[in-house]
Length: 422
Image (cartoon, rainbow, N blue to C red):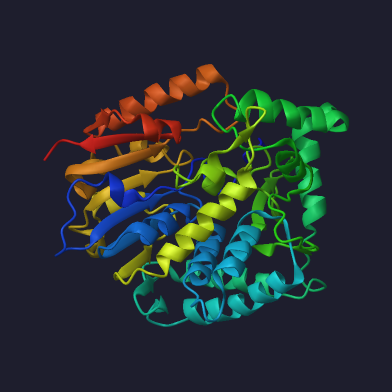
C-alpha cells in the first residue's frame, strides 16, 4: 500500500468557497453543487460560511466511512454556540479531523454524537435537520449503505474491550511497511519529504515538529495543551486483504494517508491575506505555522457560518453512483444539472469512464468544472505530475470543458474549466 492509503480522510488541496467560481447566481433557484471525492467537508464549510444564496450540495464518495465523518462534522459545525463555543468547536473539529488520538472529552462527545447520528440514519424517511436552515437528505442511499453507516456509528461508541481499535499499532504498522529498510532512519526520511517535496511544491508553513510528529504517531494538531490518549475511531476503516490461496478477509485498521498529512485542508495559507500577524516572518520563515493557520481559518469560517441564514440542503448520493447520475437511468436523477462540479484527484477517472455523457447530462452551458490536481501526492514524481495535468486537460476537453487561466487556483492545487456546449 502506498503512502496515500486506500481511503481519503482529507483532501489534497486547501478549502475554497466554491460559489466564487460560478458565473450566474440566481436568487430564484438554489445553487447546485456536486462534490465528487472531496474526502472531507472543507469546501462545504468554506462555501457555506461565505454564501448568502440558497444552496443544494450533492456529495458522491466511494467509501461510507467518509460519509460518516461528513455527518459528524456537519453536526459539529452547526451546533449552536450556546451549546458549544466557537473556540471549543474549532479545536474539536481539528482534533477529530486529523489526530489519530483524541482527548477524553472529545471521545465522550464522539460517543454521544454517534448515538444521535444512529437515530438520524435510521429515520424512515431519510431526511433530518442539524439546524433550522440545514436539511440533510440520505434518502437516496441504499438500505445496506444506511445499515453500514449505522454500524460505523455503533463502532464509534463501542467499549474498547468489545470492539478495539489499536490505533498506535495500526499506524506504526503502516509506517514500517511503507518505509521498509528506512524505518530506523525515519526522521531523515520525514525531513526529506517535508523540505524536498512539500515545501518545494508550495507548502511553506509546515515545520519539522508538526510534520514529524504527525508522520511518527499521527498527531497533527497540538491544541490547548491537551493530552491525546484515546484512539480516534473516525479514522478506522476496513480493508480487504487477499491471501495467496485467494481467501479474502476484511481487517479494520488505519488505511488512510501517512505521507502528505491533513494540514493542507485548512493550513496552506490564511484566508485573510491582509492580516499582518499571519504574514510575519523571522529568518525568512513564517512565524505562524500550519497549525496556527488551520486554527485561524477554521475559527474564522465557523464565526462567519453562524451569521448565515440561507437555506441549505445536503444530499448524499449512493456510493459510486456516477453512472446512474450521468445516464439519468433513474427518475430521481433526471433533469439534474449542476452549476459547479468538483472532483478530487482520487476520482478523476470518472471523467474517462463516463466520457461526454458526464457533461451533457449534468452540466449546462457555462457550468464550472474544478479538478483537484495531485501536486501534494508525494509518491508522484514531477514528470508524473506534469503528465497527469496534461491528461486532466485532455479529459476535460473530451467532455466539452475548456481550461480557464487562474493562477490563484493553480497555486491551490486546482484547475478550472468551463463547459461550453449545449
